Image 1 (spheres, one colour):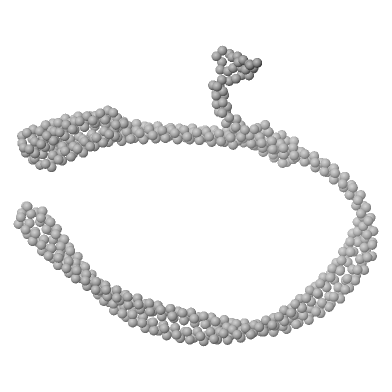
Image 2: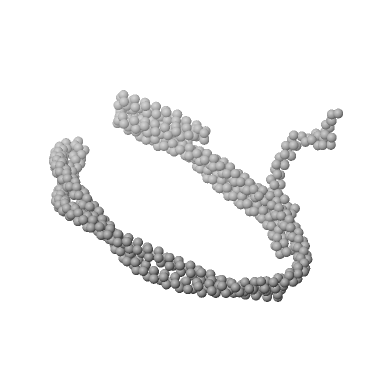
Length: 606
């Protein structure tokens, strides 16, 4: 039979099905959110790491909020700063417009009086620059200040009318020249410009006031941002300190209690109570581990008591067994004394005889080794002398070879030096030729400078004859004459220096030729030295070979005597080993006899 859902209450958000409350979707969602919000606090109760993580999450959230606030404030600050900059540019453009209108009025008046085309062009260019600056400020103000944009559009319209009046003045003067009608137009332009300037000043003041207000707002916003950042930092520090105190308060006290229980347990108090076993965090795990350790210590104490009882029983059993072994050992000692005593006495007698024989062998071997050692040392001294002589001869030959190489190298270097000196001689000769050519060119330049000076003098005379009209040409002629004089002075200085270079070049050529002669002589000497050194090296090599053959023969004789000496030494060593073995055997026999006596005494005493 299908069950029926009956509302528990009119308007209730839940229903009851067979005694079980079924939540509505809204209540289920609220319950889920509540559980998720409470989960970090439950985890913090179960773990120190969760507590620290919760504190770190709080600090992270605070830093994120601080970053968002700072970012938003910086965005607003940047927008306000941009608006202030645009308003400032608009105010400057308006002020420049006022100044440009005054300049245009001045140029228009001059144009009407003189008819000079440059005056009207300067008026129109000045007004065009101000109009362009005003248009740029208007475009940048489109998203900042609607009233400022409207005012600048009105100014632009008025400037267009003023520009048309300048065009009318230009047409009149260019057609009829300076006239009464042109002067009338100039006066009308002056009046219009004055009115336009008067109308532009309020706009300029309003834009300047708006710029100052925006700058004050930017400054105030900066202070508010700084105060907000400092406040959030103070709150963050306070939360950090509070979190640290909370973690310390909830953990350090419990850790001190567990430490006290550990100390008491280490001193042997196995009945101490372990606090904090009901906690769900890491401290609770430590407390439960300490409780297990206390239980293990109690079990160990019980086991030690049982082991002590077993040890006492084993001690009684061992005492009975010891008495039995004592009786048995007394019987064995008596039998051992009769059996081993005769053997020990025989070994001691034989070892004494062996020791005497070995002493005689050692003396004979030492005498033979001494004789062969004297002969071997004499041969070794002779061999050492011949070897040293051969080594000295080899060193002498090597030194002569090195000298030969150095002499050959010196000859090659002398040849290289001769070639280098010849190359340097050719280069310096080319340098002398080049300096002669340069001297010719300098003479040509000096002649040109003198003719230029003469032409400048003639030009000065002609300019003086022309009067006021030739004044500018006279200045140019004077400059040309001064330049010609400087050129003449410079060419004279260059000629002197070239003469000095030619003198130094001649001296260098003479010195290089002397060096070439000396290098050629040095080359001949180096070749002769190299030939003499080669002959000396061949003779020294022959002497070294003869000494080496003599040293090898002496080494062979010394080696044979060394073999004889080693044989004698081996015989002496073997005899000494036999003597040592005999002495050791005799000592061991005496020790064995003493040990047997001690053993028997110990056995009987036991």
